[in-house]
Every structure is written in C-alpha cells, then in structure tokens.
Length: 267
Image (tube, rainbow, N blue to C red; front, side):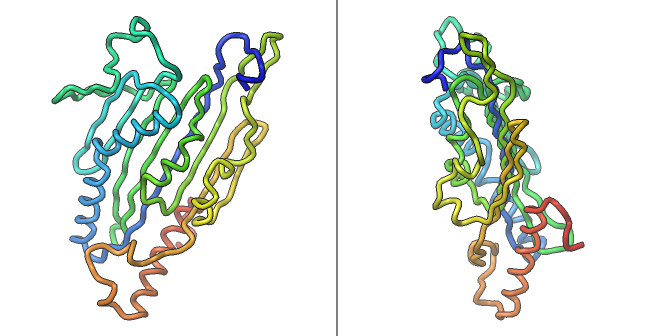
C-alpha cells in the first residue's frame, strides 16, 4: 500500500502473528519420556532459538534493538527480541539496548513489549500415564510500518518438527492517506494459508476460522501422514508386531486430533 498511496505520516498498523507449533512423540517408559524431554530441550535451547529468531528478523527486514534469552530448569527456554521496522541512526537508539550483542554471563530479561518484537517460548511435557510426550513452541511476531510477519511463515514451519500448527494473524489500528482516509489493512488478506508455500501446505490438513470484519485470521494445520520412524524414541520399530505398530499410530493420531481440535474429544 505504501508504494501506491501517499500516507500521512507513518504506517502505524500493528500486524501480529502468533504461532503454536507442536511436536508429538511416542515414548514407552518413564525413562524414554525423560530422555525425549532432555533431547528436545537441548535441541531447542535458547542459543538455537536465538539463531532462528535472528534469521526471522532478516527475512522480514527488521533490525534488532535488544535481545534477551533464558534457559529454564527443569526444561524450556525463552528468547525475546525488540525490533525496529527500519534502520535507525546511532543517535536514535536508546543506549540501554544491546542490539543483539550479549555479553558473557549476561542474564538480561525484558518484558513482552507492546511494540515491534519477536518472542519464542518452549514447553516440553509428557502424559502422566500414557506413552505420549509433546513439545510446544509459542512464537509471537508483532510489527508495524512496512514490515509484515507473514513473510516468515514457511521459515518458521520448517525450523521445527511441526506436526500440529495453530496460527493467528491480526491487524490492529489504522493508518491514513494525505486526504485523511483511514486504512485498516495495508494489503488484502483472505487466508493465512495463501502465504504458505503450496508444497508445505500439501503435507497438512488445514482449516480456517476467520473474522474478516475484525481483520482476525486463524488457520490450523495437522500433518497428513504419520511415518512411525519419525515418532518413536529410543526403540526400534522392527522389535514390534504389526498390531503394536497400529496401536502406536492410533495413540499418536488421537493425541494430534485432540490438539488440532483443542478439545479432549476421546474422553
């Protein structure tokens, strides 16, 4: 829109993308569950998550002002990046911002800010009595100006083992042209799925729940095919009978369907 219309001042529409990504695993024993959580916690520690978010800011064309990260005990990690939607002069950057340069031993943490930011939080967990473990990643990307978080959809999906994906996109506020006319969207949005690569989308069952008059868009995705080799942890499928493999597949499908629907539909 900025290239077609002459705006009165800054494009101050706020565009927010919120992700929930789930990875599901079949781990038979308490030991296997603990080993899975330890493995996934190390795979997606704050250092790796920081790298993913740095790449994300490059993809959407943003600039890092401040970065903080934290690994938690017994598991989980968080990274939060304050971003600018365009380059700033040295004199314009608050001296308290670290611009993504973390000193050794730094434990700086900043709050979830109501401005342009990128954040990620991880939540590994296991079922108390069934052989199911899951790993959830929450990602929030909020921008204003010309930067759009939708450009990072394929990168984020590919950065994690994404079995179930829940995505919300919302545009808040308005911007004006020089005649004073208000604009509540800066480009047309019909579905979040339109911004996902067709090859990626073909691997998932997907549905939309959109509230167009509120500029609120929601998509859910669940992987179509379950290759058991990708879902068992610390044991070999060749050890199992065909019936046991079917039971594992059923348990995984049940867990995925409940997460996908947001309801305990089998209880």
